[in-house]
Image (cartoon, rainbow, N blue to C red):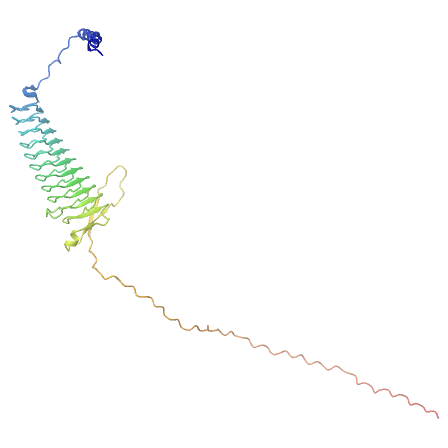
Amino acid sequence: MNPLIQLKQAAPVFFVALVCFGLLPTMQAVSPAPDGGYAGGNTAEGQNALLSCTTGIYNNAIGIYSLLSVTTGSFNTGIGAGALLANTADENTATGAGALLSNTTGVENTANGAFALLSNTEGSFNTATGEDALLSNTTGTQNTANGTGALEVNSTGNYNDAVGAFALLYNFSGSGNNAFGNSALLRNVVGVDNTAIGDLALLNNDVDGAGTANFNTAVGSGALGANTDGGGNTALGPPWVSTRSRTTRRTSSPPLVLMRYLPTRPAPGTRQLVRWRSVRILPAAPTQPTVMPRFVATPQAPTTRPTVIERSIATPPAVTTRPAASKRFLATPSASPTRPPVMVLS
């Protein structure tokens, strides 16, 4: 279509819009005008917030002493009393009282929660969400903690991931650990490259800080919960499921198995403390396979006729004799009668 024709069609529409805009009431700024706006796109609200800023740009500080020390740092956000108080670096975000309070030169850290990353000074690329998460971190880098007290004691450990309340709580300098679940890898101190998935999984791993409990993998609630110094173990399922361990082949120390004991069934809606008892299982001594002897039938004795129990045979009674018949009285036959003599006639 000809551009001139298009312009002619659009002109009335533009004119109507201009008229409507002119009829609007006069626009006014918010009264009173918002304060806290400073040069360089900085915003500060609260006593001594962003007090020392000189050439830093696009910083936001809300709360007493928030971003107090930043001078040339830029793109920082501190919300909460003392948030990013000592910070002089760039691109840090802290939400919560005391969050990232001690950070000086660490960059690109994120802390959400009261006292999250409180002690961090030079660590960078850390993320802490939850009260006291990564509380003691100083120079550790690239750690992620989500949950109250997650990685709370970590100081110099790197590349750790803790998701769940108190996950990797006592980790101090261990690196490359992954804990997902409430109190997973709770007591790990310096162990490295362990993975725990499930509540209380690898609970006592490296509890003594010996540094030998490395490269363990536990999946399931309480899996490998009693392991202290063993390394290279893999457990799938609850504690009573058998595990495969390279440590048991390298050392003479028998493995530990964690037994969970619940004295009573918890009432619905309540949570019951789980008691754990560790039992050391002694491996059985290797034995030669048992050879089953060949079965040889024992020849049977010749079959004998069973003994016949003699039956008591009553003596047959004597044949009953016929009682002597009383002689019948036979009359003596009378003599034959003699024929009368015949008379011979001469």
